[in-house]
Length: 88
Image (tube, rainbow, N blue to C red; front, side):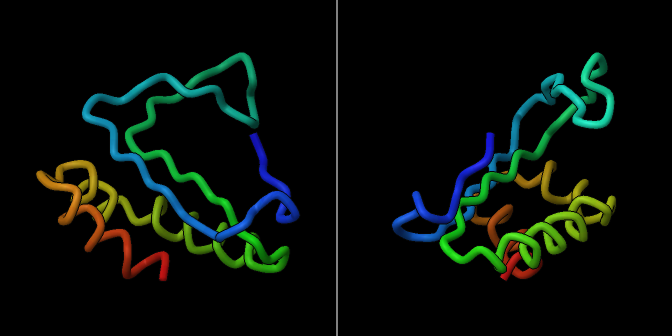
């Protein structure tokens, strides 16, 4: 689902690190799924901010070493520290 900026009162980013991967439908091949361990949800109140933030998210998920450390993090604070610097 997507959120229109007109419906966002206060911008926010939510990241969920899953204990066990789940099957997630692929956008490029709707009949296929892939295993997902990190879910990023954006609620941004500036239209131009979406593209910038999506670029940061793509950079985060393309860094496989960092992704491994995020998924292996033992506390929310540890995951936040790893993710926060990349999405700031």
